Image 1: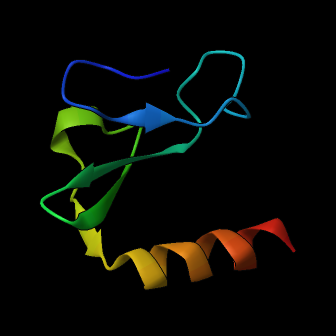
Image 2: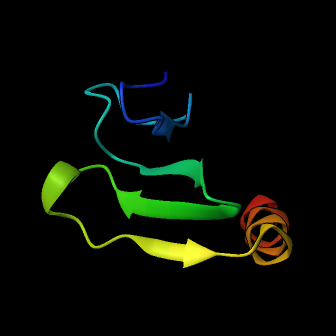
Length: 60
């Protein structure tokens, strides 16, 4: 799912759709936030390389 600001939520999010992190690509970096906090969540910026490493680690 993608919202108007480009945030993508995992399809593995909870039944309510709010138990997950969201990610988007902005200005050449990936940003992640806590979906439960929505607009109030801190946003963490990551390089594409770091984001790929995060995803690889999360899959383990």
